[in-house]
Length: 396
Image (cartoon, rainbow, N blue to C red; front, side, top):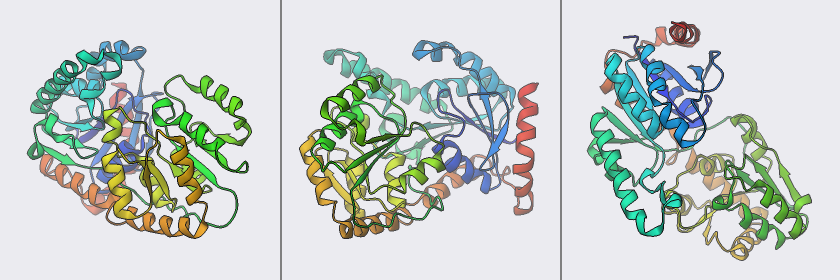
């Protein structure tokens, strides 16, 4: 066995922030040899001390991912990892199959409330049954894994309870970018990350139409639900199309550099989705660490709690564009923005900082692999050798 900690993804990109820039980087810094096998080009490279290598997607949609599980398991097992740390339900299954071949330990990383994921595809009457079935599957998979890592609170009950789970939440890490200096002038509003109707894309437009004409909306991310055409049509009909800057997907650091030029960050999840109620997104902490006040949904329990404790924004009804617009008018005061932004940044670097979460992850791995971490003298060799070693293993 190689001593490799293999981050395994069926859908997340090779450079995913949580998987590579946070978890993988924390383990690499602690002296573990870490790789990430994810959809993408097979050429091997290194990022944050993590060796990246792509695997070909096996098909489109959920059927393609389901039928691709055996092949993903074979690729993972071929690396002879010591631990497979899997990041989606299909990669959980692949990890457990691979572990039977190579003897690896398995960690399930839970990013979302999966029992509710079938809700949009089922009639309302069948949703409780669908949730119960998925929750039972989650408990079964968790029982066969060596550990479960949770990206947010409120998920442990479906994965064997708190004693079997380790919380490693999506808290903030300092990107080394100067925070926003708030001053007078028209507002630049920011939405960072995946876009779509359920994430408030159309609420943003309606709210923008209620604000002064010099207000700008900056979008950094992709539409993920096929609603981009309808969004553009709506923007034109409201007369706000010329007030929107669309940057598309950007590498994480470039996205944050773009975000640092904005004034207020929008997290406008819409009600009716259980994942939104339990949300704890990267973009909240990215905004906080950049010194941007935030507007968040009052129904999103963890997000609203973070904002209330930090005093860094407003929690309100994000389904009501007039409430969103009123909140943004309040935040047109640069002194208030500066105060909230400073509070948010301080909180994101301390009580909601990544350092404590990373320490819990590293402690878990020291229990799983007590002899696998390296001395400080060996750590420098990891970054130099990991790309070569993972590339050789994948070519076998």
